[in-house]
Amino acid sequence: MRTAFPGLTRQILALALPALGALVAEPLFLLADTAIIGHLGVDELAGAGLGSTVLQTVVGLMIFLAYATTPAVARQFGAGNHARALAAGRDGVWLALLLGVLLGVLGWVAAPALVSALGAHGATAGFAVTYLRVSMAGVPAMLAVLAATGVLRGLQDGRTPLLVAGLGFIVNAGLNYVLVYGVHLSVAGSALGTVLAQWGMAAVYLALLVPRMRAGGVPLRPSASGLRHSAHAGGWLMLRTLSLRVGILATVWVATAHGPVTLAAHQLVFTLFSTLAFALDALAVAAQSLIGKELGAGDVARVRALTRTMMRWGVFFGVFTGALLAAVAWVLPALFTRAPDVRSAATAGLLVLAVSQPVCGLVFVLDGVLIGAEDARYLALTGVLNLAVYAPALAVVALLPLPGEPLVWVWAAFTVYLVARGVTLTWRAVRDTWMRVGA
Image (tube, rainbow, N blue to C red; front, side):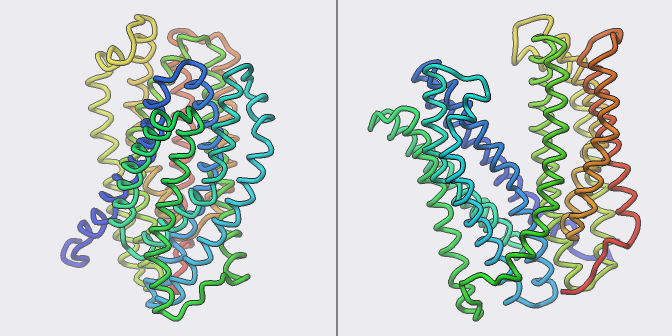
C-alpha cells in the first residue's frame, strides 16, 4: 500500500495534528473563563457556568457548519474547481452569519426563560442571564469561525485554524482578565472578552478568505442555491448531532437516578472519554478533508486506501488507550476526588470504558469518512436508529435492580450504543454506495 499510495500517512498527519491542537483550544476558552470568574464568588461562577452551558449547547448543535462546509469545499478543490470551492465556502460562512444573528437575537430575548427553566434563581440567575445576554453578541462570530475553519480544512489547510485558535485563546484570556479585574465588569467582562476574541478570529478568517475570493473572481454575495445546499446538508448533520446529544443526556439522566455517587463518578469517566475523543476527532477531521478531496478528484482507489488506513488507526489507537486506561483505572480517580465510594465507582466505569475504546476509535473515524463523503442523510437516519437500540438498554439500567456497581451497567449500556453506531457505520463503509465521485 505504501508503494501504490505514497504520502498517505503524511497526508493524514498533516491535517490531523493541527486539528488536534485546534480542538484542544476550545475547552481552553472555557477553562480560562472558569479560572478567572472562579475568584469572583460562588454565585458568579455558578451563573457563568450555567450561561456557558446554554451557549455551548447552542454552538455545539451548530457544529454542522464546519462539518458541512469542509467536504463541500474539499470535493470542489479535489476536482480542480477552485472558484467553486471558494464559492461553497462563501455560502457556508454566510449561512453561519445569518443563523448566528437569528440565534443571537432569540437567545437574548429568551435568556431569562432559559435560565429559569434550568432551575436557577436569585443572584445566580442574574449572573447567568447577564453572561448569556452579553455572549449572544458573539454568536454570529462563533458560527462564522466554525464555517471558515471548515473552508480552510476543505482547502487542505490545517495549520491556519490551529494558529487562529491559539491566538484567539491568548487574546481571550488576556481580555477577560483585564475586563473582569481591571475594568471591574464582573461576569459581563468575561463574556465580553470572549465576544471580542471571537469577532477578532472571525475578522482574521475573513481577511484570509476575501482576497482569495476576489482573486478567483468569486462574488462576495451568497447564492440562493448555495445557501439551500448548505442548509440541506447542515440539516441532516444537525439531526445527527442532536441524536448524539440526546444519547449523552439520557446517559446522564440514568446516572443521576442512581444517586450522587454514581453521578459524580460518571462525570469523571465521561470527562476522560471526552478528552480521548479529541485525538479521535482529529482523525475524523482529517478524514472529512481528505475523503472529500479524493472523491472530488475521482480517485476511488485512494479513497478506499484512506478509509482502510484510518479505520486501522482508529482501532489501534483505541486498543492503545484502552490498555492505558485499564492500567491506570485503579489510581486515576484519586487525582480527582478523595471520596472512596466515588473512586471505586469511577474505577469500575473506567474499566468498562477501556474495553469499549477500540469501538470508539472505529466509530469516530468512520463518522469522519462518511461526513467527508457528504453522506449526511445516512448518518442522521442511522443516528435515530442507534438511539432506538440504545433506549431499551438504558431503560433496563434505569428500572431494574441490577447487581453490583450501577456505573458499570450505565457504561455497559453506553457501549451498546457505541457498538450500534459501529455496526451501522461499518455496514455503510464496506460498500461503495456512499462514494459519489466528481464535483
